[in-house]
Image (cartoon, rainbow over all chains, first blue to last red; front, side):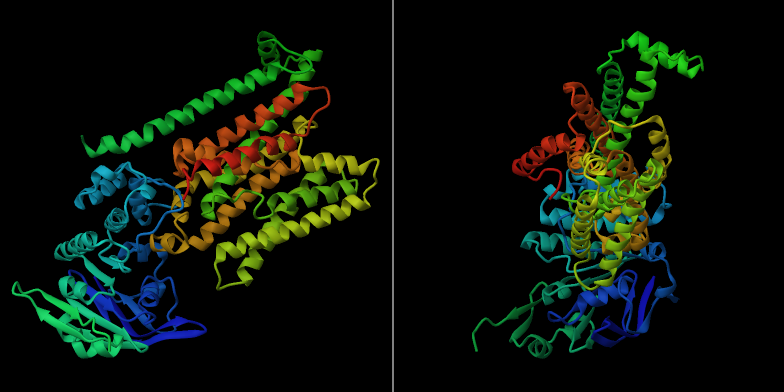
Length: 258
Length: 344
């Protein structure tokens, strides 16, 4: 699985957000998307998912133009994990995960026994099987995020796009969700995720794309892209990048007022 | 405990509730057929129905009462309740708003305007029904066109607001027709019809709306799982592999067809489409698989119960719509006050 963009321009008819975007997402790899607020991360995701028409350039999925694929075809190739939200109705956790099987069903059919199994497998693989009968509206934000990831797994697409999967999660859940993300990539899935935290990119990212000033300003390994200079330029803050004795790289901003 | 146990635990009681509702509705329908100004015993009723089925009807008073008046009215109450509650459940899921009902898109008022126009022009009953039907569908089409024209904002909010505005417009046109109507002949008919009533239902009315209601119901039953997915919102539904825009139009058209055909024979009966889906959701959860049958059964039983009350309580019939509002409005307030269970 290989999702590629060619000189992609994104935005809305009345406002171009970014252009000249060339990026590739591969199976078995975590691609992190960073950039300041308003740099176009969400717009790019919506375009990659086919929810928004590109203003220019193209997107290909294993060589096939995304624009030529039906919703169902796209859903079988790319799964989407939105930010943990509050559903309007108290579906059970299992019902929510079952909805991931929609692209594999005909228009008139309800989920089959096989779909029920896939849903339970997806939940079990994230250690969430015991939550199956609970109401989605009554579990914690961290659990909801995991349920949405389980739904993406049940969708069985080779690529998963996650919009700030750690937003609004507590510290512990952020780490748990990200370690699951890493494990999914180890199993061969491709993951594209957006985040505001450079530490997350250092922790799980194979590659980083930095979006700013209407386009991609840098792409490559986390250490190459997330330099103190770039973070200064993008966010206007002083940052020190530190390698811990264990090999882990973290980002330590200075909190001193200028 | 295996993972299967967990999933079954959430399904079995829900289907049990649907089964219980079915039995209760049937029992209610049988009892309703026996009571009234001319009581009929169960044995007598069974004999009449048997004679009717075998084509040997003898034209007795009991037979006329049961076959020409009471059973058609019961059938109409069941159909109207089921259709209103079923389409209410659909609208609520589709607009992700539990305060939405068939009235919200202006379906009821639009159909009302059509029917009032028919009465005003002294058209035959079949044309009045046709007018009601066209009025309902035309209103939804207009509301949808306005919502489509005002793009870029919160689409559901625009849709609901457009529904309210068009509804108000249709309401004022109804008032105009009432002012212009003949006060001795047409006005009472219009007023009574607007309040909602099943008192003048005839067998032909039931047969005329049955196909339309079924035509609306079939796609809803077939698409029930996709309606679940659609209730997550258009973007999410699309990423899950659904052509959300097309599906939404099909489902709205189907639900509107059901509502408009009911309004055409019963007049405007409020609150059923709003309150019954709530109760159903509290009983069986939001999954359309169970919510649709549960809402329809509850709506059918409720409207039959209320209609049986109004026709047996006193000599002068209270219009049905008055009683459903009397029961429905406080009940809805109670629902609001008791918490948000069943929706967020």
